[in-house]
Length: 456
Image (cartoon, rainbow, N blue to C red):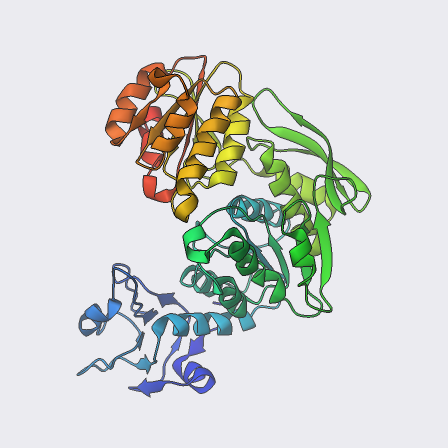
């Protein structure tokens, strides 16, 4: 935290009741496995946990507690509230109000973590940056990011994720970003939003939450760009990025090298500077444009943006090239998957020389469109010349069927990860590239680990 807070401040601002008086704190914890006697403990409830079950054992192990129920026979200071999750966000609000530097918010269906890391690399050249760690981008994670603000920080970068309506608006009410972008909208978590239109509306809250003087960085190539343009609040400036030369931020002279990494001239409002990405896949050019737009809106020069983009060497589980156990190349893109990101992965793999193998786990949360979405991925892999498709799970079986078409012998669908690994391992040789992808629930990183023997 930038400066300590007190339970009294929280109670006076947001209500609730103080038990056993007030205390000042400068750290917050939520995990009963990582207790800190100098920290405020917030007792959260989730689908599969309830920290209130452990409150009776916390005396002397934490400084104070935020709770929905009084801890009997305890001398520990307590802030009694109706909802500890909301209270967590309220603590985050006070931390955010201590910070006076630029705050950048990023959301999107896929690629937002890569954009976040690109931004961190850009700003990290000249500034002390506070940035979302890992995937801590929800109603628990965003407040935790705000708690990590320190006096030395000059820039705050907040990734925001959502699995349903109004979640982005809520996160914006806590983090209060001044410069924002939706990286893209694709069919991801459709079950929670009801439709792709619902996703676009929900993600667009990162724009509608801006106040006068804010800047909306708009992906002009997205199908929902016109919708967002019509909902930008009055007094908010728009900076549009895209592949076409008509946009304020665009690329020129895109070239993909033999290793699969793109280079291009980054052009921002007529000023050009060469960029060589160290990330695989031409789709990362678009991620770079969004990151560049956000950084430029915050006052970074084109030359510094280009330098920062070129400095990023990779993001865990996202298009990382690794050596196979004995031979070949394994591309770890296992962190998550939706139809858009799988399509981009197939396009990247199709450009590789030699034998090309796609390993696909189930894409989750696609609702009634799940079967057809998996079929489309199998069809695209076949059309783009992928040599073999290995699939894991009941949903991805549809991709395997579509890939094989009238070649039943080409079906390689597995219900057990170990069986897939045993069948796939002998295929790796010096002429082979294997790309591994799937939703988090598919645990495809375990396939990567088996094929690379932990060479990450």
